Length: 143
Image 1 (cartoon, rainbow, N blue to C red):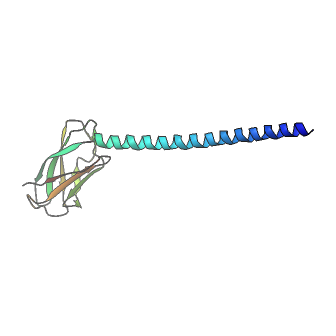
Image 2: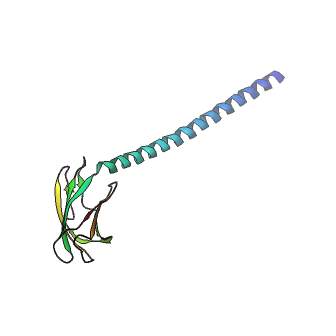
Image 3: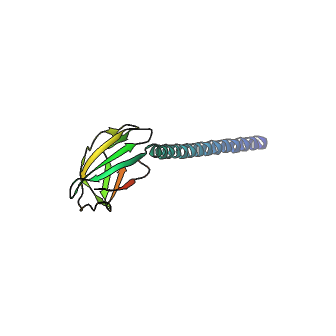
């Protein structure tokens, strides 16, 4: 009977060891899978931001508070203009037209807008941002 107790103890220790190893494997594989997936989506989002490239080709004053500006899509993907941000001297502009649609790659889109502040020809700074773009662009508003 003493020999059988030793065998049962060894088998139990082996079973406990295998169970702990399996639990550790499941924990670490789930953790690393989650980390890898999160990192992949972050890299994908950052890469998409750098594919959205544009430049302000012109910005011209049309009245005391009105102006037009043209944006060229120089990137590889269409730019959605639904969430455009337009600022004159860091104050948000209003009545931006068009306010929906897209700008195809290598295309030029002309916008009209109204500034809350008075526009100083040659001094007021226009800033344009698009959602999901890596950076904003600026230009001086001409007369």
